[in-house]
Length: 151
Image (cartoon, rainbow, N blue to C red; front, side, top):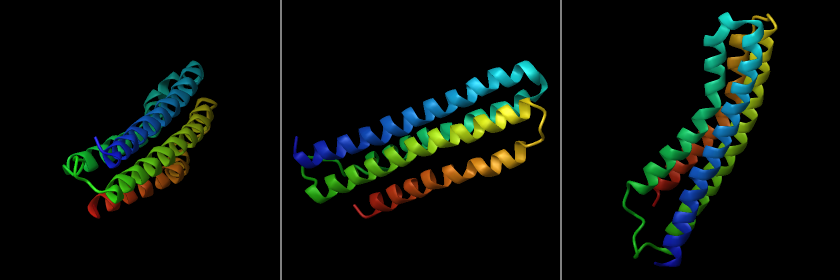
């Protein structure tokens, strides 16, 4: 196995691991907030569920990035070092941006869930505010897609 292949697979692993961990923590924050809010307003479970699930998208972006790169068949023994480094860069970008995006989106949605549980009508506003951290994960996914198209 060449160094380029090793770098590529490390990049893909980082992409999956960090975006997945971020999503797991983010949705857990939302789930914890939901459990507390259900005690006050159990009839709002649908709103809590939607908000809790939002940070899970970053893990999906990580998997989609992995799939896009891996399905092209460019990770072979004869790939160039530049290709290996490019895949590593894509993995670092999407992995870390997805990680921090999901964590922070989980914080936004958790606060919104707590607010709804306290009787405030803020579902729509929370959804709008939760899009802001998501935007950067979308940009990182787009960058990963563009990198994969240049390989």
